[in-house]
Length: 260
Image (cartoon, helix red, strand yellow):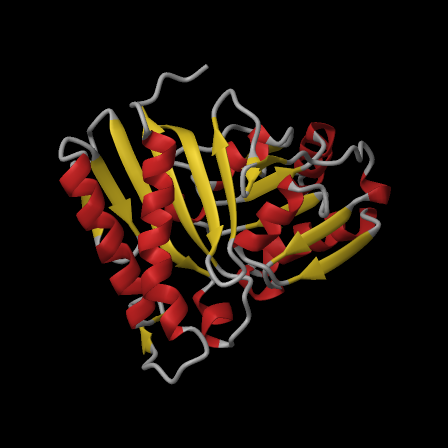
């Protein structure tokens, strides 16, 4: 079992609470929407939620590092590093869809050892800790058995995230699956951890998009890797597979990494 600082799981919950306090009052309200350098949208909810979490971390664990989507990195060489995405799914948030989430990860030596997916509007919180069972609002959750692609429900946030080559590979995988659905951002991975979705495949993700997902998915019995079947890290290119049944990860990687 991973040795984490005492009370760290409860503290991660406090971080999620602080983020939610900034996000929920602004949900389905008229707020300004700005575009970042990569043309992705950002709102005051994203910025204030991350700022609130950073303040708490710096007060409680001043020696820890932080990597955040909105405010960059500080002390990123520390043994313990928090990786934060205050609103994963800003487009869904803007559209009034409660399928976005706050992602909170704690890395030890570069490895995700704690992950939180928090949907503050629905008050659903998944917590994964390395070596422990993933929970949803305190109750254990597990992925479902689905060893073959032909029975699998495949999910991805949007086909627009794929360039032409990646889309071709994704479509080849989709053709082998039982059904394919779009939409969800981090919520899709949470549903996978709960046994409702079998496979999530995405690309161009950043560490703050996937680090928190790994302990949640793997603690529920699933597996996460890149499109070649290799373990994810801070240096990964951002091509991600999440499989509820670990056998599906290799089957998906065989198709997604095949020579065409």
